[in-house]
Image 1 (cartoon, rainbow, N blue to C red):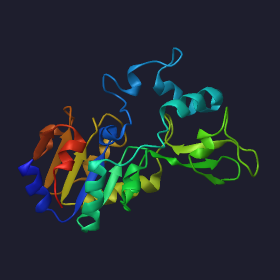
Image 2 (cartoon, rainbow, N blue to C red):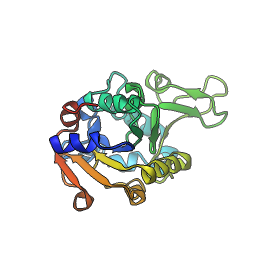
Image 3 (cartoon, one colour):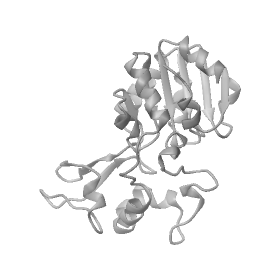
Image 4 (cartoon, rainbow, N blue to C red):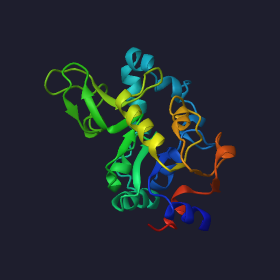
Length: 238
């Protein structure tokens, strides 16, 4: 912890790359741990199959049934890790947060420079007229959520399997990663592409990994901290 604090104190341009482990302390389950969402099946189908572009178009009612039950956590609040990054940004030392998470907690904590490369459950749009809706449109509906204006399907702005991530979010994320002096990878196994390959843009001084389990970049890192992300970040000071 003291080594991590010294790295942060000596850094002027920090970027944090976050994954599902960043939000577990907020009551949002991760995906690939032994008890994660992807460990089970849903009516004989894997979550990866249900959360795919093809399943969304072929079986929209089943997709939204799963989505409501497993992907929406409207009462979740930012934890100590989110609050630390928000404080670091206010101190003008955090250049940005690149996140694979779709829960929106970084923005709710107060971070403004957030690159949600897999989208956000807080943003939903009509596929016909592009009308914007919050998550309550899906939460409070039954079956397939419909647009008030035109009756079109309201789709979550999240990247499904088989879909390409938003290019502007990815461009911004790669720009921040390439320009930072310290990159902190926290709460992610780095097993999802193309997100994991974004780390190839980092050419700064310090690569730090904070995660409960080993990652593919541990050998490249200047510092590896094993532990719960919220507990680790909760002990840091700005």
